[in-house]
Length: 322
Image 1 (spheres, rainbow, N blue to C red):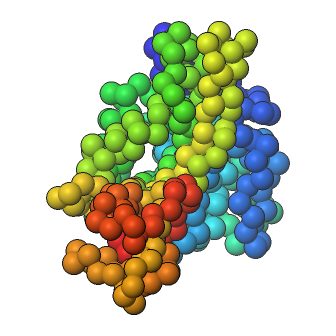
Image 2 (image 1 turned 45 degrees about the vertical axis):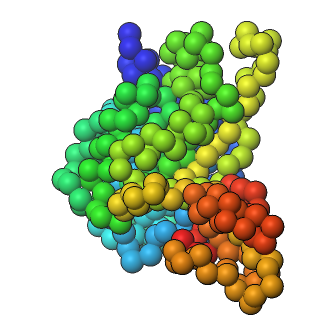
């Protein structure tokens, strides 16, 4: 049995019998006025963070959600689209499609604003998304891509890139590893299906996104997710997994490399009232300006005594010089 078959079997089982405590079901879901979430849907919240960022969801976007789970984030996206077919949820596991449909039916009964037609559940998978090229505004996935082997992760990212409109967003939440996961854990298909052994490091994760053509990546959050301890997992030292929420934009990659925003700022502390690097970055004296990591490194090297670059906050939601 391949790791994908193991994952399909595992999620078929947890679709029929929700497993409390799998991933981060203890996390309180996004609270929105008038949004009521069925308990069964909350119990099936098999994700590690959130891909639903309200500031990204203006103008009733078409959202393609990969891996419907219990339907929680599909419902949250529908809260913003509120139109027939505004959310397309793609799911390969029949039992999970059935469970999500039942949960959404309950949601329709307790949410006067929600209509079942707002979410269309389609059979399909991350490698063969059942939509045409350049047709959706947002592709989202939560705690799915991390189970893939690197070659399959590339396929999934390429598919997301294919279906996004120019300027569209890939919104993801996945576990990442603080150091490479040992081979004996990576080969454990059950742990991989449970999102505990397939994670790659932050650097590898971001590079995979860039390699398929996304020119800008913004980190929305990075937080502790799970600890793999030395006793349970036969490790020389405990391994911390972190949850990374990111938004990647389908825009061209600049000649000097992709723009990665991790919450860094640059502050001019020189004698003049402002600093202009001649490349589109103007820093007002004493005022922090959000910059991408690439620009931060360049500015720090230009005038290290007069330009202060702050550390990554691992949170960015727009604005600044880039």
